[in-house]
Image 1 (cartoon, helix red, strand yellow):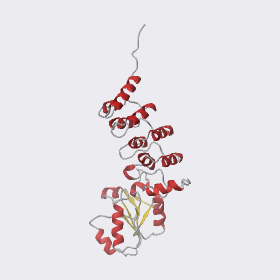
Image 2 (cartoon, helix red, strand yellow):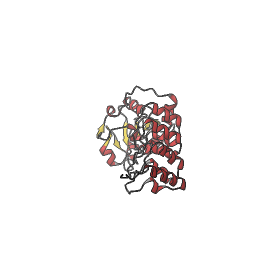
Image 3 (spheres, helix red, strand yellow):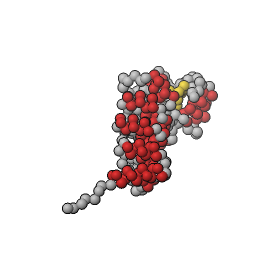
Image 4 (cartoon, helix red, strand yellow):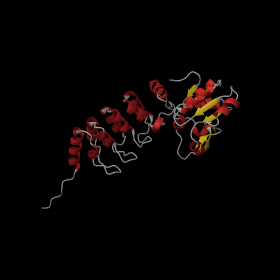
Length: 278
């Protein structure tokens, strides 16, 4: 829930807000190493050792804009500045992650570097409202938010099929992964709705994608004892013979008898018959 004492801005709104306030004090509430690597041009790093000085020496009527990693700490800081009498305070929804910057972008970044992409796509009002409510930028429906989850992953995780379908209709990237290396199909398995998995697979989300440990969605489903998810993935052609970095297969990870039986049958079916000689 937003706080009426300050304004929460999406990236598109923040771009316009800052363009109208060239004298704004821009504060970066991330760690020093992250600020050093890349930051908004003209921003100062905000931390516990300098916030009192900034609060007491900055004119109260000067606009203040605060961003952090994911838009959580910035709210705490924004509340502090508002409590101290600042009248025009804003923070960035989704934080630095919401800017959708390329990894190679380094150093001070101007407004032009992170301005809204001119996609020309007009989002359905319900989707735009949902993106806003979930901390995403309606102007960038393919941009990751918290933990690197894209709106498509978030919709899959929450089981919100209407939003999932609308995002797929926009042709958002299907190969995106989050901070753990998992894709939207994995998040759909977490929620546990077979139809969402079928829909994602039909649109081209990779069935056998492996995360940073070499685990697939099938392995997750097996290790969680989700027999319905295992059956659905196998019916779509997921490979039960893949192994993790530690050489464990989905069969090795099966946490229930139903999962074990499904995977044994699928593994046998995929085992080549020995060649016979006449």
